[in-house]
Image (cartoon, rainbow, N blue to C red; front, side):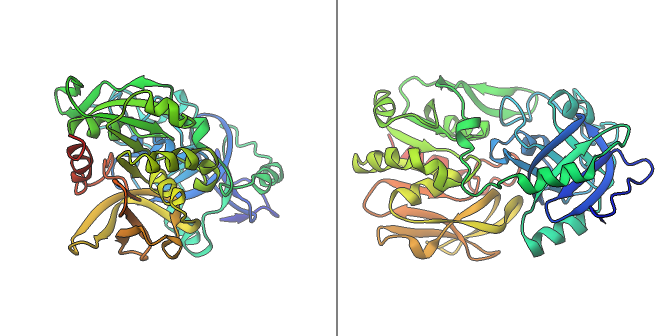
Length: 385
């Protein structure tokens, strides 16, 4: 790691990360050429890099992968969680090698270039991760130039000028259009199952930046799924005659998204419509009953996060991706904590005791990650029949 005050570009460096505090990290660029500014975070998952890059919750973020070998299984059309990538770029330890997997369709380097996403390899990701753990997730600029012609002072100025995720509503920029969801669960050799919605409970899902595997798991659990955009009104939701409403994951500051989402959720609660929320949806549900959210020091991102279920003490290994959390002390009496993180004790689930509503901070749909929490989809959909 170098300092922006002495920005000599090392010979052969074609990629650079410039942090707002003046730290400069050089490496080998891959993927798209150019630069992008956002929050630099880390993810501890050892599989699923394509699913991570396409998770809309990573909008506005540059992902540091702690697993050193990223890209060696290539990419394919099935392992995506949205129509396009949302992470701004990625930072990896080892150079991206030729793919070695029978499902590969396009090498990761080529896929990143085609999707307009920037990567840097050859970085000491352990050192960068330790820095984030100590100092928090910084703002930074990732850049790739095959000629290594970097204007470090200009990149530093861009990193310093970026306002950060706090106070930023990103859900409105990643939400999808109204649609009927068609895909079911994926099986090797068969692909995604078709959705059969005849005579099934109707779930209206509010898309704040949803991963596709959430909808697939709702279908697998027995639901017919209609998707509405993040700014859908109460009347638009109720016009679809939902048996239950799902609040999706998504990026950005929940308090900012809550400016338009919370009044709608509050009206759904008043009407006693069954509600299930995940990640950002969990935070918005907490806000709707009077709780507060806070920006986390480094956030939780990975596929190995232990969560304790308070009802019976069982531990679920979960997939997580969030930089904000529900302030447990701010929850009202009718919002009972149901899950906590065993890493730091933060809130990971609530149940509204006088309404048919619950939510979790983690991602029970995995993709990537463990499948310990699939039961939550069955709990929600099964209670709608």
